[in-house]
Length: 224
Image 1 (cartoon, rainbow, N blue to C red):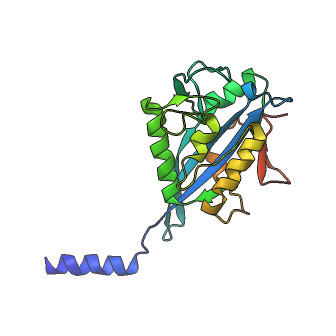
Image 2 (image 1 turned 45 degrees about the horizontal axis):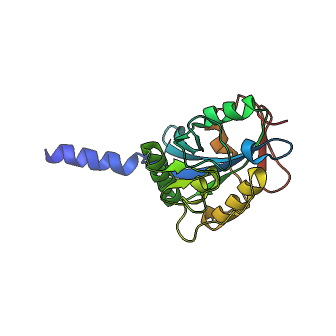
């Protein structure tokens, strides 16, 4: 028995350990038409967790990823600004891109930005809350937020702790820019984007190009 223990100790000493690493990212999206009609605009976000394991002994690298999306829309997919709170549904990333394409909307994205584990976990809790039916959808949600009904913008921004983001009548790209600023204190190096996270998102299998301004990324398969 003692000999087995010594052999194990020797192997632990000479064999390089497999190192593990977890990284978290957020991608912020905006959809709108040319007139930025409030009934055809949308803000949503996808959060990505990437787990990496590296074995220095054989120079192998394993990478796995999981993602979740906050894309809060009426369950019917369409809405009127002055309607009462209605049942909402949290769409997946692919469902949301299809929703935008069917309406001829331009979709752009900011990021991916690196975030901490705490923000990712808050996003997961928000997704659970939306999926549970505990909150409704309301485009103009000032009197109903955050416990009764929220709109798509606030479904994303209210993930973060602290004062709620006030977006006024902003929508589409302008609203998503405000959400990006709201997230900025929670971003790790907000001036840097991480294309590695895009490998794990099926963005219509199209090339993704980094915008020259506002840390935005445009997906050619979704936007003109």
